[in-house]
Length: 325
Image 1 (cartoon, one colour):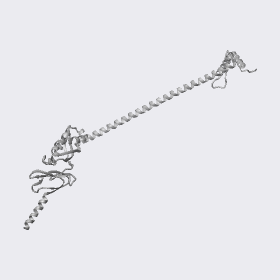
Image 2 (cartoon, rainbow, N blue to C red):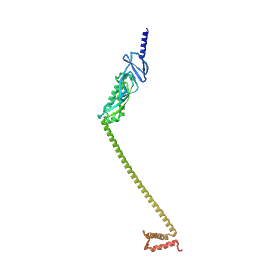
Image 3 (cartoon, rainbow, N blue to C red):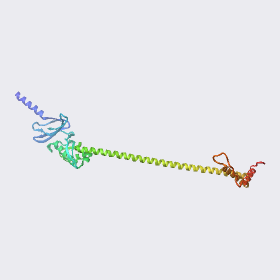
């Protein structure tokens, strides 16, 4: 009797252990009852019927680091399905561009399981299906581009691939968040040709920049000389104008002074005596100019034929001034 009780207790303990399923956070377990989908166990403690309810296994891929630092990809079956975003780093694959250049591309895929039931029942090997679908889609996208566009359009490729993968992965209960291209490696001879082209392009740009600099320098020098010539001509013009204005004003002042002097002489001596007086003064001034000779101390005085008239004018001057009275 005691042996039976012990056996019965052992069976109860085994059933209890088998019937309790603890699911970690962000994971779920698909339960089949007698080979048919029954329930989805969420995180926490769950109770199932042992030997009747059984977790459904799913193929999952893991990435490990090898002994020499290389990346090792392993696949194994698991019962718990991770609902967090998963990263798949695919090996480099050969892709041919539109201009028939064979390049090696390494892509990284970020996806998340949104419907665990579809991920289990709609596809046999989910990691392999996602990898193959990504590779074929990448070949199609790059196959429509030439090499130069492929090397400069990573953002375009990264934005195009998730849209292409969405239709197929929705059926599998998977959402592809993004695809990133890590490396794009063209053949060795293509890289050498691209390096030569890049050096030639840099040399061309440097030559163009140097020529543009020389041109701009010549233009600035010419503009500076032009502005200086214009400023010099403007200054000379302004100086001539000011000089002419000064001479004009000086002449006007002299004329005004002479007019005032003549007016006073006329007022003092009268019109009949003022004319001979002024004529005599002009005559004497002319004699002084004629008598001057450059370069010597001797002066020659020439008395013109009309000197008697001038002497008569001097008598008029004496009378005007009242000398000898």
